[in-house]
Each structure stands twice: as C-alpha cells, then as structure tokens.
Length: 278
Image (spheres, rainbow, N blue to C red):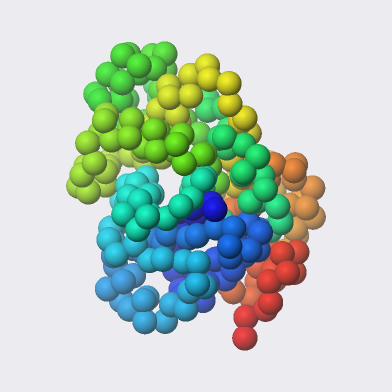
C-alpha cells in the first residue's frame, strides 16, 4: 500500500474530487491510504463539517497554520501519524492540493521505483532574486550539514509528487530532523524547506547508492514555456493536448483549477474513470 501524504485547505468538494482522482490513478482504494493535513484556519472555519471522505482517508488530528512555509512540517506530521496508527505501507507519496492527477498507473509506477525526485540543481543563491535566497544562504544548520555530510552544495528542486520507499523516506525525514529538530515554530520557517533543505538532504542520503530512481510524478506547467502560463496560473482547457503529450513519468500537473466543473477537472475525471460529482 502507498501512503499518500496530502495537504489541503480548500473547499470540501475539491478535496473529495482530488482524493477520488488519486484513488483512480493509484489503482483503487486498496492501493493507497491518504493521510490528510488540514490547515488550522480552515478547520476553525468548519471545513470538517462538510468533508465527505472516501474510506481510505484519515484526517491528521494536528493542524498547523500554512500561510508561512510549513509544507514539509505537515508531511512530517502526516508520516508520524501514520506510524502511530500502525499503517502498513511500502511507499510514501507527497503532494499538495494544487496538483491534479490525470493518468492511470501511478501506483504501479511508484512501486516500480525506490525514489521519485528529479536530479536537483545547484541553488545559485548569490544571483537569485527570490525572496528565499537570503534566508537559505543564512541557514547555518543547512550550511553545517552540507559541509559535514553533503558535498558542500545547497540544492533546489520542486518536490510535489516526490515518492520513496518507506525505509528511504523515513531515513530522509529522520536525517532532516537531526539537522533541524522538529518544532512547529521553527519548521514554520523563513523559507520553504521542501524546495531547498529537502533535495539537499535527499542527495546526501542517497549518495551513490544503486537505486531505481525517476523524476517526481507532478509537472509544474507554469515552469514550462510550452504552456505559456504565469507563475501559479491555473491550467485551462487549451492545455489538455499538452498534458496528454507529456512523458510517461508524468501522472499529475499543477496548478489545478479551483472550479470543480472546470474543463481540466472534467477531463481528468474522464481519463481516470471517476464519475462526475452529483
């Protein structure tokens, strides 16, 4: 079974749609189990009251605020909850509500590999205009880590759609918690750890091991010139032919439209055999 670690805060009907799509992409309810982190503010506003979940989904009872970079902390909490519940999973898949699965076979793809994460690139912090560049460069614990255990370089990568075997993901997260002792306030962070610290630690942990590796399963359309999308812009109907032509290692894309009845969501449901919402 694949443990799907999810982070949500949007409308209950969108959450359910996402879970049903992932169930279909993974090979059915028996193939995966979802541990869901819900944003603390959304819980305060009653999201649980309207949430109808499939039977293979569990809500993590711990809710963090996610208006600051906390995504990696949410995934750590999800894995800890799965371990407390005694779930018997073989692989872990990480994603957020901003992606949408649209191809079947994701479960088989994950089980055929040990790690799904593209080779990270070196973070060019001195030349970057990103708001995260200075906080990353000033993270003394990250610097100490790459000097002691890594190869001296801080790396960066997209992480949505990352997956790994249970043993490997546990080792990666434990190594991260050894560098940054887990604390809600600290992991709220001044930069997104999942985009810099995570890929840096992954490469140090994996090293030169002989593993079955592939890129992560989610493609960010706004990062590709073919889609002609501004940063964080939503996928539209005219992008469907491009999605269909993506390589076989791509099973999901972001950013998912927020309209339940959008052409992209309707198309994804058709390709995965998910009924239209009532």
